[in-house]
Length: 123
Image (cartoon, rainbow, N blue to C red; front, side):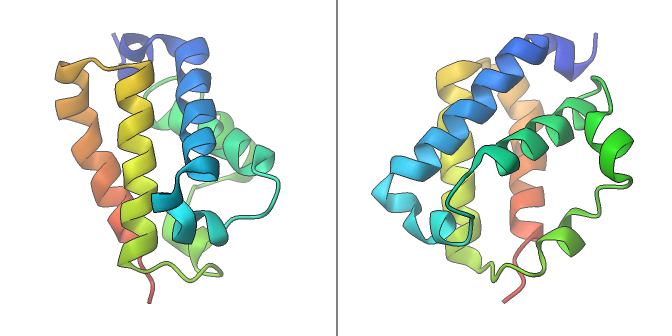
């Protein structure tokens, strides 16, 4: 069983991404992170869903559309500091807790997400 299957596949992953962007859009403590995103978050949400799908062992939607993720390179145009990265991670952790909540999976997946989020820091 892949992590994609373990989290519940497409419907749960979509719920996670939807909740993540709802939190980013509404939490005052995520304002710096929100400010570096476009006004309409739907494109970012779809790309994150596609990326996470393949990253978790599900359909490789992102790579099929865009090629190798090169996540840091793709994020270089945005000025991402420690504050923005930590706010992004706050939203992700909270969305995870609200939509998936599985502690065993969290221990396996969230440290990797945290490393990825901090890897995006470029200022």
